Amino acid sequence: MVDVNSARPQQQSGFLKALVDTSFTEWVTLRVAGGLYAAGMVITGLISLGVFGSIWAETGGVGFIIFIIGVPIFWFLGVLLLRLAFEAAIATIAIARNTEGMNK
Image (cartoon, rainbow, N blue to C red; front, side, top):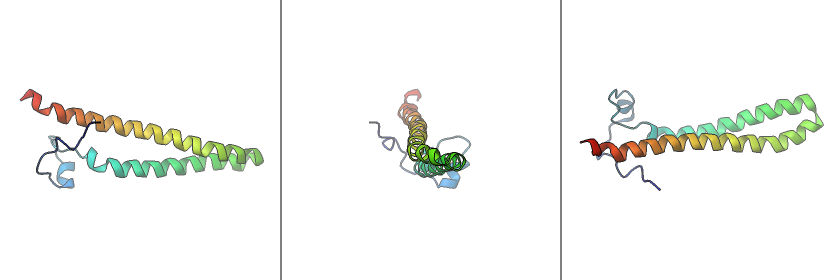
């Protein structure tokens, strides 16, 4: 496992300063990744409830079975894809941090 915090600079600037940093010397992604991931999990849950709830409303009794089975599967697949995307971004940042000093 790669520790993305090991190459962190001693002094970090504020969040807003890092957000408008046009030289991209500060990593904002690592600061907001956890919150965005949690929000994505909630949004995925709401979307899955909405999609399968509308199927349930349209089909009646059979829709209930689809709802009970479909919501957890849809949520799991959505969260899995979201997690993979976040891990890819974090891994890319970890690689960039580890290779920053190689060109100097």
